[in-house]
Image 1: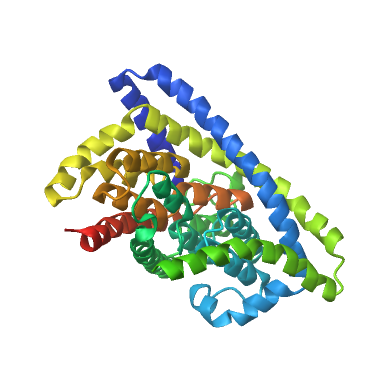
Image 2 (image 1 turned 60 degrees about the vertical axis):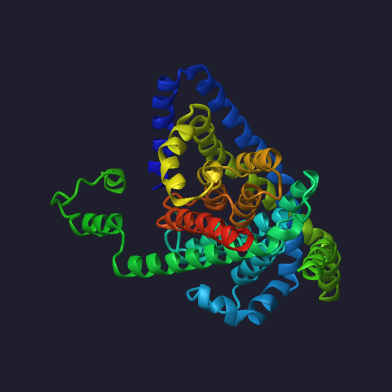
Length: 226
Length: 181
């Protein structure tokens, strides 16, 4: 899916640039995009370093485990396959609370840390586990109680009621999050019943390793053995 | 609504300083060597942020090209008649396409709409609600999965985009209901 979207963007951009006669702008945009990718990543360094340091203290003191146990029932529903009292749950809770309070620069490091903890439980390191997908779904729809940035912008343009969108935003974000959780659940059960194709291919390759040619053309792992 | 809003803003202002003080204090009480532990954990931060660079560069190049080539405007023009037919102000349509792709870009667009039509216009309110109610799906996916080296994201992107789609229309409908004349 990501492969497709990426290719789609680039290919469609090229065609659109021909139609609109914006080839020069396209070149500029490509390098501008690369630059902002690096800028954003560098901006993440300071918050990542700081929060991961602070959260390590919390982890070593047993705080995260405590939070995880305390909020067990709530996260149990969303992350049924993460073991009880696992530090991942503590990070997930910190990430969700930071999102809810609108603390963007605290939410991202904790979310990434939660991903790293979930990765330890993940049997296939290059494929997202079900729990990882759920965490991502929660973060893409991110429940926010107070959209502070927008209130500030509305104030700048002298709104009579800058905070009047708090209610509508909360309602919309709750609906979006509910949709995300429902969709995540649906896909999760679908994937459980029907494992992805490449998995079948792997087992087929190992079964037919005695001279027989693999049923589906065995690129990658098979080739390395030869 | 106002006292609740002020209360939440106050909590938001206090929570980070509180954590910065409380976590080390509690750890010291538990006999954790706080400063060494901080340094030990902080070391991981740099590598994690650096790991994200290739993912973010790849994604941002594609998005930047998509916008600059005019492909996004063409897509918006294609969907616009549908919006007009439904009685939805089509000025907010580009925001629906932009929101999952770029946080900074959609914020800039929202600000532009607020500036042009006024924060208390229906367009201004809808744009504010859309911008505030979801996060940038592609950015979140790139950063979170990129940081741990996930290459196959399975259904995660579909779920994220679906929730953006639902959130976009929910924001419009809710605003039309709440602020509608």
